[in-house]
Image (cartoon, rainbow, N blue to C red; front, top):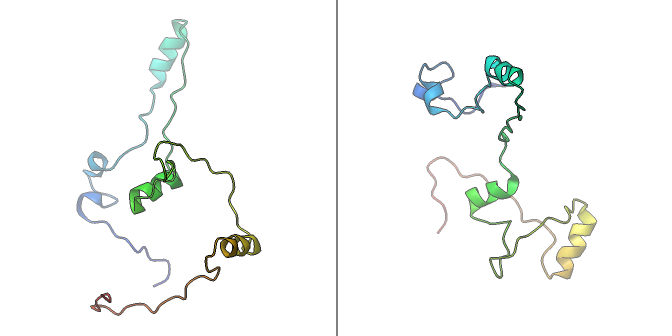
Length: 121
């Protein structure tokens, strides 16, 4: 079953549901050409409408999912944090973690649970 969607929507959220447009957020409303042309004809300046970004920033996603606020200082709560670097090279990451006294090796992957198996206490 390759190339099969893992999430299927039924009812109002189904792709062809008649009421889907009423419950699913849509993008910014489309501007009608007649209103734009009328404003231009009247000599008014037409300012472009800034559309909302379709993607949520990673810091906001971390806050939403894990309740980790990456934009505020964890010590005082008032200061704003800024990302100054993204370290992707493994030797540099290993050196930093070793310097901080942390284990540079990632934890081993555990086996997947079988259906109906409870989490260990």
